[in-house]
Length: 143
Length: 372
Image (cartoon, rainbow over all chains, first blue to last red; front, side, top):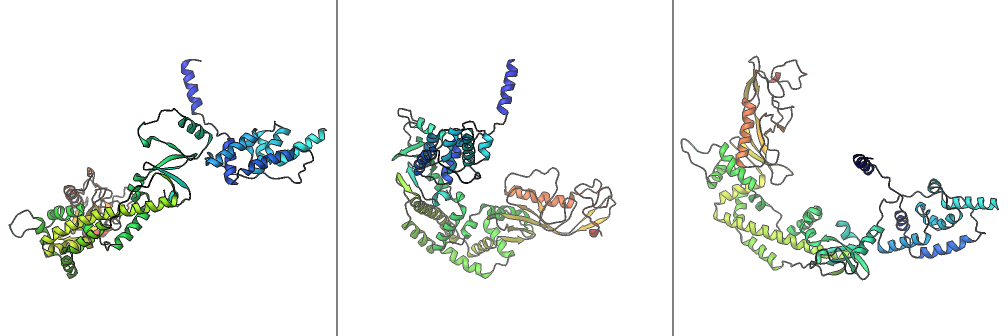
């Protein structure tokens, strides 16, 4: 590639529209602000992790994904920011940015442990509880 | 600013600046860590204003607004609130009449003492001399019947003692506003301080106005009461007409006027030398841009696009001036009058319309009713 071509391709690349990527901080921060979550949510997160790890935990219903309008760029107060970062650090998996309610944040960890290879489309479309039920059923069938 | 003052949070005041609680996202946190890193050189060492972020009791605050700047520009930032506060204040001191402001108006002075003498017949017979201010006021007094109440008002207007007393009263209770002390403040504390400061600012401003008013009234106390009555009449009505020349204050625009000259009936001829009698009208110019001559009445003419009021006169090589001066106003009016009366060329059929029906274009304006 000549130097001129290189400049042209570089400029074309720069001009190209870049889609806004889903950002885990924006998503979780929006949830923290929307549901006014407090520090106590972290202890709930611990408890749910413990509770769900038992095989005898059963779900009775299929839930729908909560529609959510999150801002493109979230700004948080110091408390909200530390809570958001703590949640992100605690859950620490790729599914977290698809959570649209506090409940889904709680189910994020167990779902990831059951199947870490779920597609983005599925995560965007179905509630994590539904996906968890599905994954559990699949695992039981195999057994 | 209004939202800030009505909110419920703690802010920090430091060296005349309002610092708001810092909001975070990962990029900001990174930036803050870099900024607050110990040993990092300051942006402008020695200047307290150089601190963009301040840490106070483990909380970060970011520099947001200059208190002085907000205070200085409050009249523009929140015009509605400022107007209300000013109104309340003026009511308190019985200063709601703005005659003094109008008498200070330079535009009105220009129209009255520099444009009007050009269009008005001043001297009788062969006598020729340049009119002084007093002569012009005398002339107006002769030509216009000024109601009795203005003569009465002029008498009180010349008594400056009451105004002096009000001014002294204002000076005695003039509050000195101090900037708020550095440190944490709740928004309602800031709001209270801010309103006091705005009040002090209005007071200072009105104090200046009153001082000017006092000066004017002192000048008038030397003048004849008839002159003061004439000026009060003009200031109050905002319009006047002598010998076909006049001006009228534009509604809703303070200190803006239409200056006009009446034009009698006149005859124009078309391509076939047929005569058309045009009715009288007023050619005017406004004291604000664009400085172009226009016809005040509902009127039709080859140089006017439609048949309605307030239309600009079409003039090919006319370059409107940039500012309103007596010379410009006279030139614009003269050009407008000349264009209407002498500008139409029957051979060329210039302008938007032709007097005779040409049948070339669809006629929009017809002059058949003016034919004699």
